[in-house]
Image 1 (cartoon, one colour):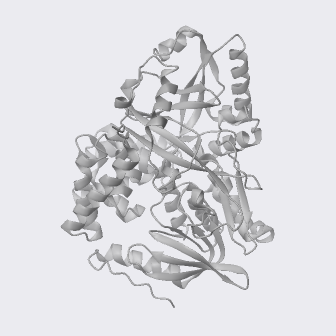
Image 2 (spheres, rainbow, N blue to C red):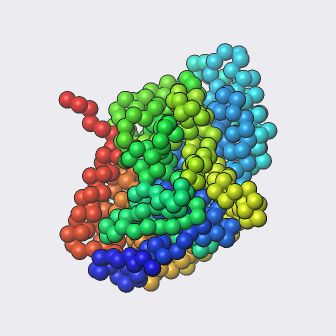
Image 3 (cartoon, one colour):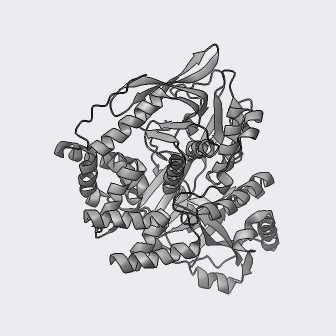
Length: 556
């Protein structure tokens, strides 16, 4: 037996022992499936494997959803623009998955109405109308109903800032919306409920081969520095934009496996752009979304090849100005840099063609690609957040082989995500929490939207600990949510909580500085931090958050 030691003796026993035992189990067991990478793809694979009764483990060198999976447009959608590229199969597939996720996670995924303004000649309305009709027939109407046309006056009543010149009305349709990072954490917790093991701050260093076959990985625990081996019958590379890189755990020998594309989004106050609906703006070669996000808009995105390191990317002024120009080109709002609360970059791990030849990221397919290397390593690249479940199913099938996969089929199509319940039950739960806890109804509903049926457990913990107060006057989350994130959601840093368990790092102009000290105090009491540890945690968080989410200063 390999013993994994930890040095964090100052941590409370429950937290210390749980992580120590998980590390020991990771080293001791021979896993059916070992997943490397904690984005939505890797976490979906973990859940798929666990749903089949397999012994499955996942390791992530940083935090769940730290990369692309917390930096998306926050949509669960078919990809309307892909119809112009004749990617009909991809759109049908995504809409089918959208419908399923609305049922499996109704607390996390909801339908949102979007307005698509029509500009152009007499051809514009029938052209875009045909596209939306196809979207409906491919599956969109099954959940949100058929799209409908609004007249020019109706369109301006809904969105007064629309440029009137050339406006030929608008189409109203529906697509799904979610908090991407919270969804990932919920998928992980669902997998854990089925016996899977998932650890953050554990880095895969290199593969271990025996007889020409990959039989595991050498790994390092980022908290203690301990190195050990993990053995598995199948190893899956779900590292996204790191796939095949020379500085990653499984370098590709001969060709480029992904073509990273930079997707930048802006966070802008909701009242800065009055609109009853979300907006889908047609711009050259693609669309720009204005996605409603409680008190803000999430606006984007760009689509340019990434030529910078994939770790913690930051927006550029040119990218921010590009999105501002896209918005101002359709809306008479005069949106400017100083309107932007925050910005973030996601790197899409677009799969290259079989020859590994890069091309335009705009035209590159969003379909996923699964490769099995000669040594048995299974790699997954490309795809969309919306289709993660199907990608996971097919990846585990590839790892098991057709005969075993048929004998042990995926169960994720009927596996609710933790906290799921019927919409009416969730609505009633918000009312009960408000009545029983003294919290106002909006805050109770917010908890239900984040935790589903577990919201009552969060409130019970807050009552026991005396932590049902908001973190701050401008910060919606309750203090108890910090403790819950450590105990139940693997949060180990201020960044984990403020950037992903909540989104305050992006939604607050100060990047959450006003509450970071209190977050560190609450986390520190759970993780055994000293005063200097807490101060260092806040400093490290703010340095990273300003780099990742600020509008950069113009060079003098």
